[in-house]
Length: 254
Length: 254
Image 1 (tube, rainbow over the protein chains, first blue to last red):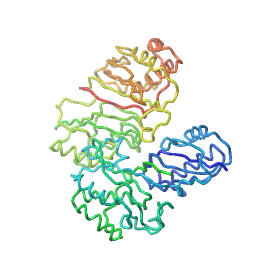
Image 2 (cartoon, one colour; image 1 turned 60 degrees about the horizontal axis):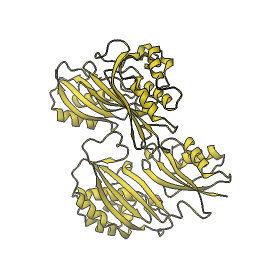
Image 3 (cartoon, helix red, strand yellow; image 1 turned 45 degrees about the horizontal axis):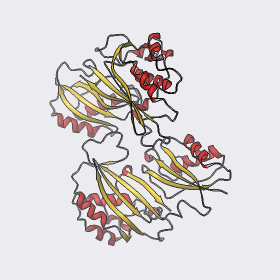
Image 4 (spheres, each protein chain N blue to C red; image 1 turned 180 degrees about the vertical axis):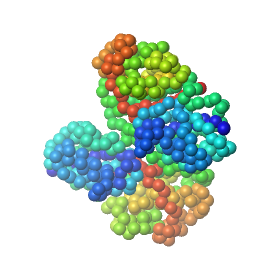
């Protein structure tokens, strides 16, 4: 059966995350329903990883097989007609038979957006963490740099053991060790944007990193403490989980 | 009692418009509740005019009197803490005793945004009318220019007689005659933006103008037909009502 690769953008605000859950609106569920409406086939599209409730995607990737032969541009247009405007198919293409949106991941990039202005415009509120405290951005930058390289990120993983490794891909070893290729903050007008690229991410990992970097920016911890927090391998050692609404899955590399 | 003037921005998506309605979430209702929570006083803030369900505001103005003496910056901050993030107070200031947000209006400006790209990003979908048809922008421009000046806008007013004049202010005569000072389209990347400034607007007037200008852009009517449509003074003569989500109350002048 022809294998498909879709690239999707979505506003996660109104959804209970990526993964189908009975009785809840989810991205995977809406996409499966749209595929069935368009092709008559019942498939469960596999994502590059789950995103939590409220987390957005600029380019999530999903794969699935379809029996029906259908030109990519037709599937693309038909899915966008069938989907709500909060989910858009950016591209639809045929993929190699062994392509799998999750298993084939080489690297992923996430972005987290903090709004620093005094009054957050209503149209930004769903897509940023509005934080009006004084923040020492240089200290957040130092803290962010310390997580690059290969580390055991247990301290930054959701405490729920069932969930802690659920965002991992086979590109990462079957434990809490991940490799972060880049991790840094940039300032753009009223936004403070964190960009992190790595071979895999644990559940809540980016949001827990953000909470910890904010602790460094507020000078509740020293930037160097990130080193100790990593070594402790204990969730309570790190900072709080930052809100989902500032987080975007930015891109997935294969 | 001290008179107050607030300037507000809001995302109208989740609201049943400006005006309080029992059992519905409205901007005026949320603002009244926030004022009461902050000051203990029960007042009904008066807006510069009603906005319909789904219509947004970059700078709506509201006025009300409060007995309690409270510094403007304190009221400003406290209201933003009490309001949902979809409504923001941009400024709070003392006003002259005779200032009234609706009665004192000299001119208002509205903006309407059409998204012209092939795939509308999910974070824009609530704030634009995504329209992928070919449009002759020059013809829309010609049509838009024809409504400047003083005209009877009955053809562009909601057919409901009870509602047709509800957006008027005393700056405009008590009928369907309004003066439009400027009316034009601009192109900005994937957006086609209509800006209209006038002494008053009838209910649905901007959205009905947009529906008619789109008819001109699709060449279903000639731009010059706008003249005839105005002369007919009959709602069915004009085009359809464009969706609320593309409309922003841009500014109010006093």
